[in-house]
Image 1 (spheres, rainbow, N blue to C red):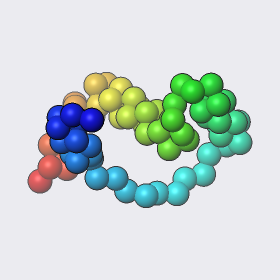
Image 2 (image 1 turned 45 degrees about the vertical axis):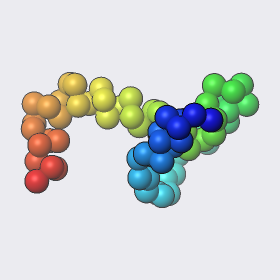
Image 3 (image 1 turned 120 degrees about the vertical axis):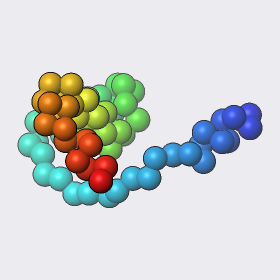
Length: 73
């Protein structure tokens, strides 16, 4: 592992632990993604999906509402 890799590992984004309820079919499909090696685990799959949703909403709606600037205050 290079020094750059070590530095990047030390700069991980802080995370919050949350509990969510999802339909069984969502969970089954997420488990399939994990089994096929497309994502590392269920948490990673949900983080990816949530990130894509937020990015899409930001581009479509939240920027117009000045949502992110209000939350920076």
